[in-house]
Length: 395
Ligand SMILES: C[S@@+](CC[C@H](N)C(=O)[O-])C[C@H]1O[C@@H](n2cnc3c(N)ncnc32)[C@H](O)[C@@H]1O
Image 1 (tube, rainbow, N blue to C red):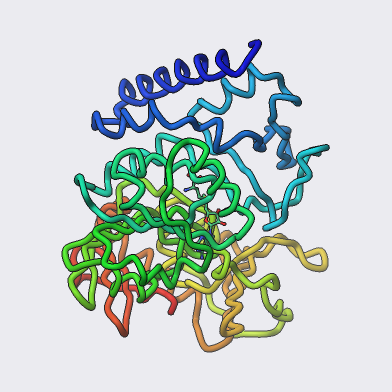
Image 2 (cartoon, helix red, strand yellow):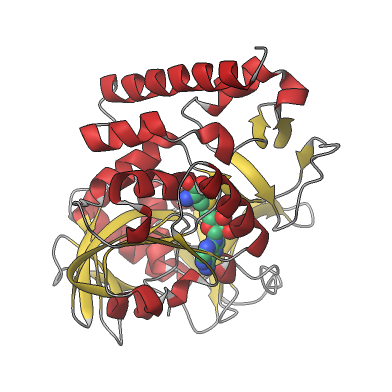
């Protein structure tokens, strides 16, 4: 490519191709969102980014810029259906001399376009609606909404000032002027309320109460819920005054957790070999890694995390530690089965085994059988219907 005009021409062509591909794959349905996808120049929102390199055993990210991979390859990658990471550990990147990054956690990114448009379609917007976005990130999804609804109808909150500033430049540069707010999205933005729709592109452990008072009755909240072990998936709630209720989607997309809700750095105190009360476990630790049971484990032990290790020459045990109450469960192999030792105020393994048994009684359904109801004093995920088995979300 030789100049800016060429870049813009190639980019426009790549956008059309991406939109066509998503439509053919059944991941883009509406002409309005197709028009937005074809119009918004994603390369202005991710002029530089990181891609995961798939070396065995290590997770590393490599910088992708016109300088590191060549302009043609950079542009081609920008318009693939991938999430591109733009920040790690909340720190700025030295783009003058970008290095390969490992041992770091992504903290901002441009979400893969198919997931962005799928959520935007789920949001059921109509002309003239007023939308609050939580997690501006690169500003790409904000720009799609501005194209569809007009900048005056879009407010977007980002917790990281530098990230918000860069998004602001990219948005202005592509002709959009939404209301950008720097702050914790859990407080929403009362100044622009009431909103017809709220969409969050980072994951939350529960529904922030402020959202209920800022979304009008009948309005929609679309967000991923997640815990410290895994994502619970995408929930779509309809607001009814002081309460909101709705269902999870069938698949479980996952977003990075809201910064203020990240797990404490320390997993907690590891119990000694004689701590706790022992019993034979009905289930083994594989529950924690198999999709359906792991979803139930996340619901039943919302403040816990686990790791497996061999202590003092013993076989590998799995330690489940609740960093809020200090409760624990340790699973160790015994006589062809498992023994569990539990201690603290929460019997973690009892709760997990019971939740998994309930899920099996209901036919081991996927996440679309679950819903969530939120009121001022309680938030619960239920199975089957709002009066079915319930698990309280952490407050
Ligand atoms: C996956 S990225 C957003 C993707 C973005 N919508 C896009 O299209 O580029 C998630 C963003 O949420 C932001 N974030 C994390 N916690 C937040 C919070 N409590 N309030 C607002 N933004 C938050 C992160 O800094 C990050 O930029």
